[in-house]
Length: 286
Image (cartoon, rainbow, N blue to C red; front, side, top):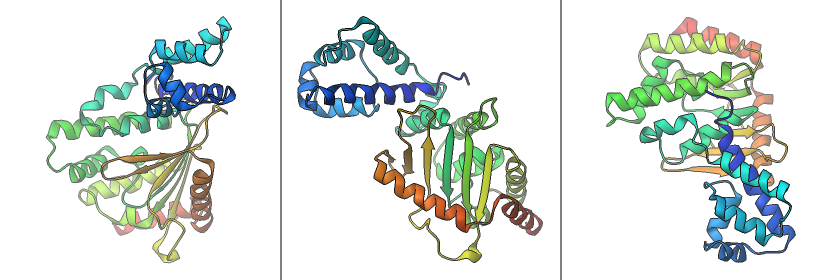
């Protein structure tokens, strides 16, 4: 995975936020901006959120509308638009990916901090190959064996970022339910537990287990991920996966609520060392 590829999603978000600031500073409505590039108000909204690719001509026309005549500034923003349109490495897996997932893979690969609460199964970044295969087969019952293997390959490719030279920090709270629910046979589960013990020793991984014994806890709304980026211009993003789509929340007040839940989960769960002991206990029982 080359370092620049995941950044295309982040560059779209950066360019979009800069275009929004320029538009707002000139007091121009989204409707008027859309009219200037023969597009709808919703297209401008999607551009400003970084959800679509950028045509050079559209960016040029918007910069002109916003009064940006300085050649250096125009060139800088136009080169950002060009970089934002580069397809990431995951593009080759688009035949087996749900439509909303490439955006997530791009954001995950560009994040400097990934914070997660997971309850149904072990998070994709921490799955062994055998466990991942069992999860994919369960979730895609009608898929061909070739499609299953491509989904597993994508998951393993994502994991390379976690052990790269400049990896993100991963802070994850796994509900004990995710460890008790078997995917695959006994050996698959034993291998997965062993892998969690080993990877939790990495300096960039903070793994905590929320035990059944704690009872009810703050994660009652289900699994979610909070992504933070090294670029100061970018706000944190909450990712919520649903059955037929996904939600990306970046409003400060929404993100703050999820961060508060994560803080409570981290506070109420045993620390990394105790959680590792809990994993060892489960391994002995399996």
